Every structure is written in structure tokens, then in C-alpha cells.
Image (cartoon, rainbow, N blue to C red; front, side, top):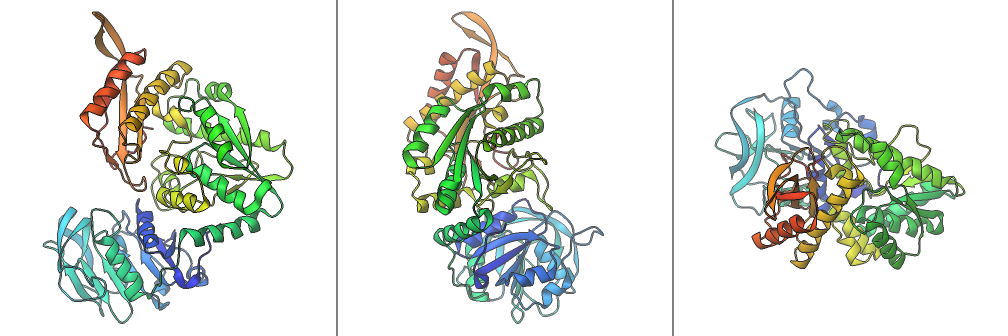
Length: 516
């Protein structure tokens, strides 16, 4: 069920399939205006029914002149709404309104110098010479009738265009990414100076809206919440509890894929922070039995997702009227699992990994939020700081940090190495500065070493540490050499079976944060 927003403050993003469409939503929300992402081919009557303040056309991978390229219903342009087109969204708007779009003579990818050539509201308050992030192979050759060129680059004569009368604006660059340092100002100008938005959406208003939605959706039924101990599921538990009180029961499943000491730590922290019923289920044996011999990461995720649901169903049978399963699903989970218009990167166990025949109705109040927004919600709900700022941990746990088959021996090895990494990161005062830091075991690769004058042939451990704002993009963390040295020395000396430590210095993209 979509989040309800004040109609006068709702912006709708029509999604043409860009992997980072939700970054546009994130920037709009930073301006305290609520927005939702819907498919580009949503019927116009459904758009009108939501009474949006404005529309945004996202980017996308297609070329507008291809026969199979996505196009919106032309009636959208007659709704009288302000529109902002971004990248493919600009090209689609240009072609729809009478301009020619063709393959660029020189494609633009990466940081590009941009010159504002016409004074206008979209660039109001910004310098005339700027740096933007481009990623396009097609270009608008000249603006449609009624439009004027607002900005240009050396290789793109129409890098931004606008029709002041109809409040149609478009940019070829990506204002939503951090590589366009003033991009949020472009979006804020569109919202405030062109659309007249007042910016009333806050985490407090989100909580109030969700409480009402949860109560209406659940009624007098019971909800079970899959608790992992991470901030996503903890925030969901706190929110659902605030909405329906003792109709909620949390279930913490120990699937044997947890970090060192996690099963005891989660129970103690949760009990100290909340007055919510918690059931602990030790399911290590059944999960490892299902994962035996499985090496494909997609199969791992689906098996874990299905087994989670089966455990919840078994426990729910012991409760009265338990019809709903509450999950800490966030939008990065959804977009990477594949939406209607975006390619699947990997199946998240709580999205595409769920079985079709499960007996629950899903309750996912955070489904359209980013991690930083969830943390803001958690602080608003009074969740303890140490839980709010806990580093993310994937639902499939250590299973997707072992490349290959998951066994008890490999899990214990990885658990020990992972604990050392976290311990040293905390000792160094870097825990809050790093988005995620963890170990990866690659048992398919062994290397020769020497310990105590003896030859060893053992596994390597990969250190993975990244910085990020929302997990949609990430940079590898520049950890101090002395920290890496301590981690390496401890792992090799304290974890049997490991004789080499390497550091993953790949950003996202092209990689993902997790290895599987």
C-alpha cells in the first residue's frame, strides 16, 4: 500500500527504468516534499487521482527513437502540471513535443563543464559556470516549440531547456547524484520556485501517516515481525508497535548465519529497549541443511527467504489471528531485486526471495525509504542510538559473504574474522564513519603461506569497508594503513585456516556492497 501524502505536496516520478530513480526521490524528500515512484505507463486517470503537485520523468537505458522505447501517454502534457525531465526523461519530453533526438557525435560520461546561457528559475542563485554529471549517448538537437535553451556543454548544445509558460523543464545531466554538487539546488528550485511547494513532509508526518495506514490495514488481526536486530527491522517493530500495541509479536530467527554473539546480543538489546513480545527460534540446523551443496548466490537468497517464511508460519500458527508479516524492506532492496522497468541486480531474500504460496499478507511500512530516512524515523520513535547507528547486516547473513557452499566450519571461520574487523574499526573510532565493514571468505581460492617455518595452504579473507549515504552508491573506505595492519595481523594469528588478508577497493557501481 503506498504511503499517503498531502496531495498539494506530492510529486510523482514516472520511472523509465533508471537504476537510480530513487535517488531523485531522495533528493526531493531532502527538500521536505513527499514523492512516489510509479511506472511510466501508469494510466493518466490514476495519476490525476493522486492530485500531484508536479511530475518528474526519470532517466532510463533506452534510446527514444528505438521502436521499443518506453513512452508516456501524451495526455500527461495536458494536465497543467509542472514537469521536470532528467536525461532520458528530457529526451522523451523533447521528442514528444516535436524536437529531434539523435545519437550524439561525442557522447558524454562523467563530470562535464556546464554553462548557463539563459537566466531562469531552474538555475536561480547558481553560478553561470558549473560542473555536472553526464551519462548519455543521445542528444536533443534543438528544443521543441515553446522551449528555450537554458544551459549547454561543449558537446551538448541543449543540456537544459525550459518552457516557462507551461512550466516544463528538462536537464540532460543528473542532478540527483552527488557528482553534481549543486544538483539538490536545481531540484529545490524546481519544487519551490516553479511548483510552489512549501516543504511540509517530515519524518514525524511520515510516522503519523503510517500509523493510520497500519491500523486500517491490520484491523484487529495479529502481526508477526521478522526481527534481525538491524535498524530496518527494529524500526519496523517500533513503528508497528506504536500503531497496534500488543497485536504485534516479533520473531527472531537464528538461522546460523549470524555474526559472532549476535543471538544473545540482539535479545538483550531488544528487551532493554522495547516492551514487545519476542520469540526466539533456533533454526540453524534446518537452514544449513537446506543450504548444503548450494553455491549459486541467487539460490542461496531464495532458499533463505523461503525458509524464513516457513519458520514464521510455524510460529504464527501458535498465535491467534496472525495474518500479517512485517518486514524491514527498504527501497534499495526492491530496486536491486528488479522492478517493472529496472534490471534485477540480485534477489533480496525479503523481496524476490519470498515464496509465492506463503500464508501471510505483507506489511512493509519502510518499503519506499532509504536507510538514512529509516534512521531518522527511528530517532523520532525513540530507538536507542546504539541500535539506530548499527552498521547494516544483510538478511541472508554470512551466507552471502561466503563465495560457494555454506558450511558450519566456514561460517565459524568467517565469524571470527568478521568480529576482528568490527572490533578494530570500533577501537579506531571509525564505526560511525563507515557505512559497512565486514569480512568475506572465498573458499574456492587458497594460497601458499608460511607460519612457524612451515608451509601453509589456506584461505584468504577479504576485508570490505565502504562509505555511503543510502547504499545505492558506495565508495571503498580509505581505512588507515595501521588499522588494516592490525586487522590483518589479528586475523592471520587468531583464525585457523586463514593465511592471507586482502582489501576490496571497488566502489558501487561497478560492484555491489555485498559479494553475493
